[in-house]
Length: 208
Image (cartoon, rainbow, N blue to C red; front, side, top):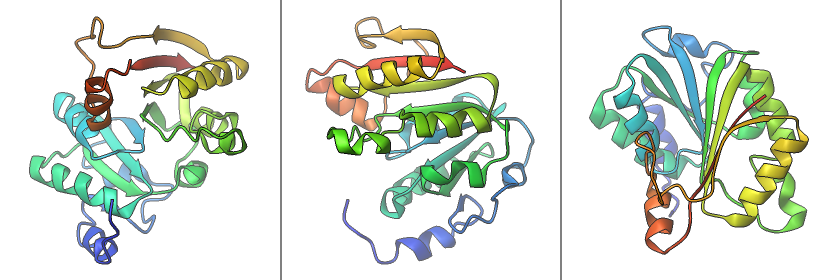
């Protein structure tokens, strides 16, 4: 996505919806009108997934986390159009989750079509690497679920091994989500694109 020089100012002008300067660091519950269970998506893409989830489940608070300010603009536009009280966004590097969230305050994490970082030397950047799993375990309540979807077979296999070695418990492993698509599945923009190209979609649900 092309760089938009005005992106940061645009996001700041929507401070009611998106936190661009970590103003809610350590106090994310204050960002929402109601205190409810908190589900987060790390890497929002264009926002279809998290906006759809929030619309379906008004009794859950959803927070979308994205590092790219240009991408975040698209998510803000969708969220603003829907006027959902239970949806908020934060411009944040996933490496700093432990700084932003308190221990055990998150109830579920979604990882959708994360960058596969295919080169071995970049393995630590993958969002299912043990470094990130350690962060997730800290901010998640006990027995909470991490839900992961990808079309990338290599990343899927890496994630299975990484989660298994970390001692996580697999609640669900689906090797072809669209073969018999679960009713609760929400297709992301990338999911639609990759599926139309004949890629299988892999899905993992696991807990610590």
